[in-house]
Length: 506
Image 1: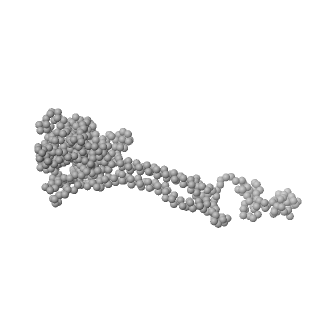
Image 2 (image 1 turned 120 degrees about the vertical axis):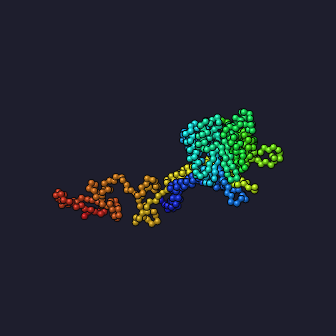
Image 3 (image 1 turned 135 degrees about the vertical axis):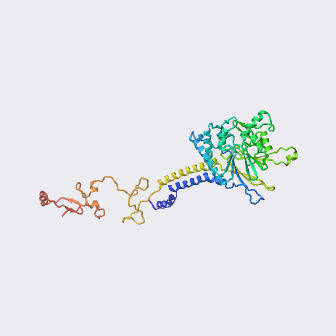
């Protein structure tokens, strides 16, 4: 290898060590570890970094607000949905992991009370036995683990037990054992929170409508939703109404800028109803006079103000519209891009202060994490490995490894002389140490003093000045009779050696 090739080899050696295989593999591993930590936990904490409890400006010194967390539509899937194809099981596993991570970062807000606005289970209405329902509810509790001191309330949803046409006689007792009463009243500082059984109200509204009687003349079902609402109408505190099904509104009503798309429209189907009936909505608003309404079921955020009915025009102008907020779904859905929940702060009201304030919070989009982070990173990883392996194979074919320098006294100064001649191009099969040839040599060359074939001693002395074949030794037999007699007696006969061979022996 010449001097220019040696300089090229020395120049590319540091670069080859920089992009070596361990460096590339460990670099890709580090990038993937960072991406997984960010995609599985980092984006959740980042999305909630700006989510804080809304502050209420109060003139009352020393009053601390009560923090209430509103969660809608967790939609925990049935354990049997894990069975089937591996793709379905993998999707179910990722779905539950997303719920656990979302709940893990949400409960770090340290709420005082949590209200689940229905549809805790996605397939509860299809459960047939009591033991199966208890196992299903145990799965929900295993996902939404919390401190026993945290007060939790559960509103019934249409997917939790369905409407009356589906619910069996034993089902209400099982639901009551698992989740508590369907409708309840919770007292908070300065307010009371009323939770109604919206699916039960829909069933009773169908029965009332079939009889043709208005709500003022309707005889409520014992322990039913209508009877509970009438009994909860008395009270001096401000009322906050919680319902799983949104209240009725016009189909053209806007849901505000925070909604991703569309609006809430009236619709009825097998086991669901998008909104309450108009008469049921008027009955709730006139009876309870709530300061605010929070609902779920629609999966997307919606903010709408219901007008208050008044006997005259002057009273209608003084009346304040009742604001309703439909809370975003806590679980992922095809209808929305980002899940979310609602924060509510309550304090004792004063003539100069508001008694409550709420704010929405958004969770990260898990589909975007897979489509915008993991998928491009996987493609770049494969591309990087392909480029590196291609470059490495070409480098191995082009790199010339210089053999060791000769220390022979015959080497010319300034000229590179290999100590062991060998192949100029290195290959993976080239031995690190030169190996002597294994081919068979003639006995004359392997053993110069062998008896089988007469050889010349000069052949084993390459440094002898007279080692030239032209000036080599010549052997002639002796002509004296004394030599003949010696041969007859078996004695050695000396031979005359003459240099050069042209000269006659004396």
